[in-house]
Length: 360
Image (cartoon, rainbow, N blue to C red; front, top):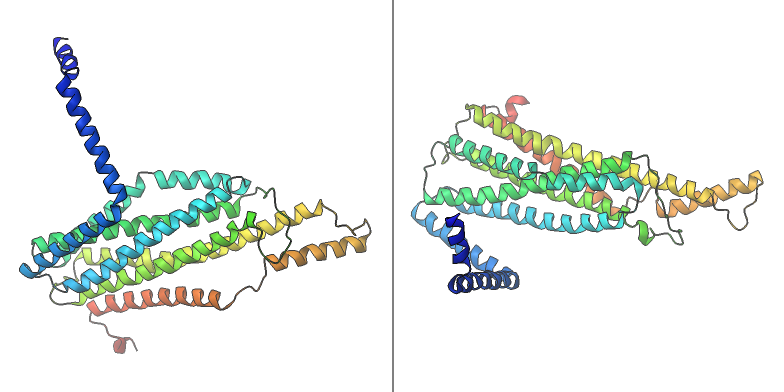
């Protein structure tokens, strides 16, 4: 008890209170400086970090150092940029659809998944698997300050990429839950033109977000495959292809990028179309309750009314709205998927001494 009393008395001393205020003000000012000059601080930190890497590489040379820098900085900036855009767009979609019954369960599950500890655990595990696995795989690489610098860059880039990868999976689960929901859409606005009303414009934005993430992560996946293949092929690294870790790392890349990406993309396209069908169905049911000015109870009048409603829906949700941009996006996604598959297979076959001529 005497100790607690002494601590209490010490905390009431003028010097302690004064020191506490100074520390609090210091942290407050530091926080304000970081917020105000965060871009400048980031540039300064990045420049110093990059300079250190170059100095380390000059003293302790790392094979293909600048190839590594270019590839992994493209991947890192691409992943970070896409995640920032994703967060902004998905938050807007969540805000615009919060009152719609089909979205309510999907909203809760999506937010819970993003706050789950597994979002931090999986990226750390993947970083450790590839970081430690790479060090075991490359027998010619020695532990130097340059290697430590390279591993720091590698760890940061892979961590950000896996976080984005998980968001890509969560986006599919979000779209899936909305698509399979049996709830009907409510408070549907009248369609007065051949464009989506502002209140349901989220449908177009959700579809565009899926296309955006597909394009970005297929591209980043290609860069990862190129990077890993490059560092496996170069004799300076001395890759031991017969080790189990070699097959484990390539298996992870093959499953995560070559197989899962196309499957997720195909499912997103399919369930986005299902959401559109559900929205159309809700519109039809809603419009059936409202009679058109010239509509009567006669069978012919009802048929004409249904035709008019279907015609209005066809303007807003056209069946053949696949313009040049759509085909470009689709071609790009398919092209990168085929590229990832071919490069992965050729790289693995090369290590077993099998060439294309042997297969043909």
